Length: 184
Image 1 (cartoon, one colour):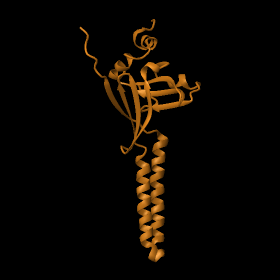
Image 2 (cartoon, one colour; image 1 turned 180 degrees about the horizontal axis):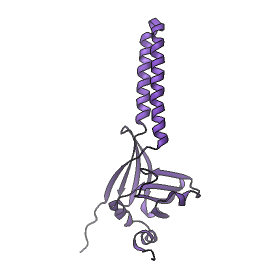
Image 3 (cartoon, one colour; image 1 turned 90 degrees about the vertical axis):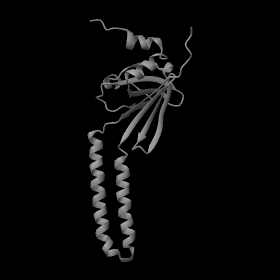
Image 4 (cartoon, helix red, strand yellow; image 1 turned 45 degrees about the vertical axis):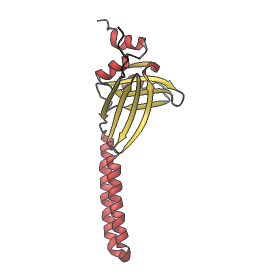
């Protein structure tokens, strides 16, 4: 007896880890905002009638610094629906942007991500949607689209995600990554 077709839907959310450069930029943003606020506050005493305007500028500087500071909080959401993978970038839980939507059957290559293996390759589009370069659960796939050309997608995958992807992925990629055992 045939089982009825059931939809497959899996979601996974990954928080991007900030790099040392991003932390340095955050510190510089805070210092710059504090310095600019102090300067505006000091000059507000000399402005007389425009003192209210200077206070509004200080409030704007503080808000702008907060907005930029929190923009470093990035999450990636992966959703797999019936063999199609969507990757969204969520910035500070206030803005969502679709990075890519691809069918798993269109993958040309697939495997564990090792940055050194992709350093010399020429991709028209690179989508690094993972938590960090040193992540143990980082996987990659390559595929071609008319809009993006030869594309590299790097993402964090759970066992459940991989299981759902295997069902529609090209069989040679499934064999290479999940069936074939290395010779010891």
